[in-house]
Amino acid sequence: AGTRWVALARPLPYAEDAVGETFVLQRSFDAETAFLRGVRGNLVELGLLALLALTLTSAFIALHITRPVHQLVSAAEEMEHGRWDAPLDLGGNDELGVLATRFDQMRQRQRVYVERLEEVTRAKSEFIAVASHELRTPIAIIKGWRDLLAMGAIPQDHPRFAHSLEAIGSACGTLERIAVDATRLAESEE
Image 1 (cartoon, one colour):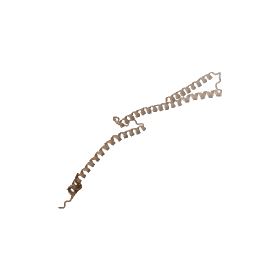
Image 2 (tube, rainbow, N blue to C red):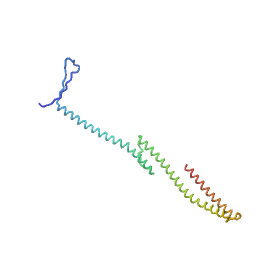
Image 3 (cartoon, one colour):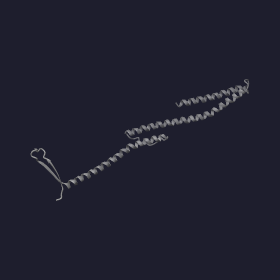
Image 4 (tube, rainbow, N blue to C red):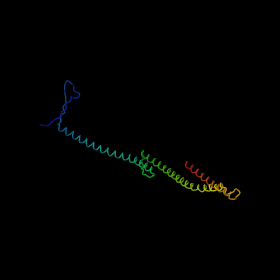
């Protein structure tokens, strides 16, 4: 009466071939189609749930992996600009937590090293400024007395002659002290 059927015919198991016994399974085509549509709908729902679970899991994993890596990159970039306090998650027990802890330790050592270098640079600049100023006075004394002595303005038997030699000796001592200080400063940088 207009109903379509699906039939499946197979030989009976353990039957002898000569007998030709078969079994036939017959179902309504509409019932089979409805069943398959239901299965397909259930599979689509299951697939969507699996896709949602996979997306959420991927996002969770990505955040827990990429966020610490991004923090390390940001902290390294901040170090390039002399800013040493970029935040890091140091509490993790995984590889990224250990890496962040080691990075923070390295960053603190680097900070101390850079601060010491800046201190040495400041001291060096101050020394150069002071030495430059202090060099002018003994040089002017030596040049002045040399010119007076070279012109013969002060005879050797005059008391000012001995004073001029003392002034030149004192100026040379000042130059020597500045040279020693410069050598010590250079050695302290090594």
